[in-house]
Length: 216
Image (cartoon, rainbow, N blue to C red; front, side, top):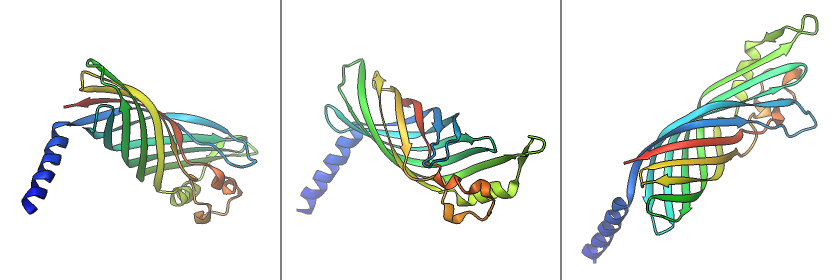
């Protein structure tokens, strides 16, 4: 019985290995943030980047799994007449891409759904308050530090989109992604400045990313 189970396990591993490819990925990320309150500031997106590695496993005629480990940089600008917040974070992110597509020999168009989790390893929070006297932006490092401490470091969300694979080795895909939850934990603010009172309502990043991959 043990030999039979070992043989089955070996056959499964061999079958997966024969239909698996390692790859490198990278591309452009455009992210933004929204505000869930009566406060209606202007929000602007940031154009940033992502890069990493992937492992594509063909699991049938139309289904493939593609786990990815990447470094994702996301950010946004939130501003009103009194303040200007620039927020940026770099995340180590693990995604599990699930692809549905038909192999047409030369190319394979596919639909992709990708849940992900991540942790912020780099953050830059810059809040500038506009002086009522000179209208000159004044930057307060203590407020920026408070925002960085209050920022939710763990992230989770999903992406949805599509792409095309060429000659079984090159991929290009476009995804809309959304992080779930709030960007800041308002209960962790260490600064009592009124400028922070509405920031607890800033929702986490969302946006679009374009990814190019090469598989071997």
